[in-house]
Amino acid sequence: MTDKQPPTPRPSPLSAASSPPSPLQPLSDTEIELRLLMEAIYLKYSYDFRNYTTASQKRRVLYALDQLGLPSISALQEKVLRDAGLFGRLLQFLTIPVSEMFRDPAYFLALRDHVVPILHTYPSVKVWVAGCSTGEEVFSLAILLREEGLLERTQIYATDINPASLEKARQGIFPLEAIRGYTTNYQRAGGRSAFSDYYTAAYDAARFDPSLCADVIFADHSLATDTVFAETQLVSCRNVLIYFNRLLQDRALGLFHESLSHRGFLGLGSKESIDFSGYADRFAPHARAERIYRKAT
Image 1 (cartoon, rainbow, N blue to C red):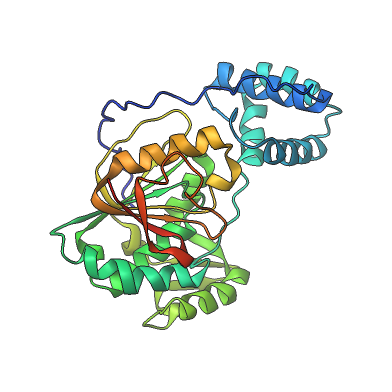
Image 2: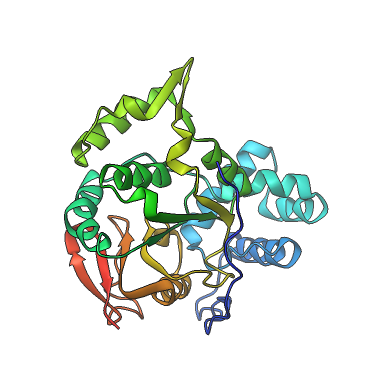
C-alpha cells in the first residue's frame, strides 16, 4: 500500500482542547490520579487524552494496571515518565481498537443509496476516515466505492493516533474467525459480489486485496491536538466521539466542519449525534437514523 504523508496542515481557528475547569464537587482519589496521569502523558509524549471521558479513561487504565502488574495509577505514572517503551504498551490499552468490517450495515446501505449518487457528481472525491483504528472501516469504504464505480477517482485519508493500529491497517490482514461476521455485514450493507472475492485466506488470517487501498494515505493525526489537512466531501468518524467529553467532541466536530466542502457529508456512529453539540446548527440530517449529516453552513 502507498504510505504517503497528508498535505501540509493549514492553520485552524480551533485551538487544542484544554482540560476543563475543576468541578465544584471534590474528585475521588482515582479521578485525581487519572487526571495527573493524562497530564503527564500529554507533557511527556504529546498524546492528549485529557478530554476523553472519565469512564473511558478509568476502564482502560485499570485494565492496563491489571495486564502490566502494577499496583496503582500513580505507580503507572511514575514508570511511564521514565520508560518510553512502557508508554508504547500503555498506548495500546488507551486506544483499544474495537471495530469490524461493515459495522452497522444500515449505515453503508444509506451511503450507497443517499450519498454515493451525489458524490458521483464530483469530478474527484476526497474521503477522511478519522480514527480509522486497524482499518476495517477503510477497507469497507474502499469496497463500497469500488462497487459503486467511485474508487478510482477517490482519495481516502485514513488517520489515527496509534502507530501500531495504522501499521495493521496498512497490512490489510484480519482474523479469519471474524470473516463470517464481516460477510454477513457486507451482504446486509448491499454488497454486490461474493465477499470472498476481496480477500485471500491463509491459515488463520484473511489478506484483503492490496489494490483496494493502494492509494490510501495512512497518517498519524489527533483530533485533540491537530488541525485540518484537506478539503473533503465525506468524513466518516464512527464510534470515536463516544469516548470524548463535550469539549473534545465539539473540537472534533469543528475540524470536520472545516474540512468538509460545501454541502459535504459527515457520518457518525449509531450511538453518536450532533443534536446537543455546539455544531448542531451547522449540519442538517441527511439520513438521520443512520447518523449521516450534511454540512448546512
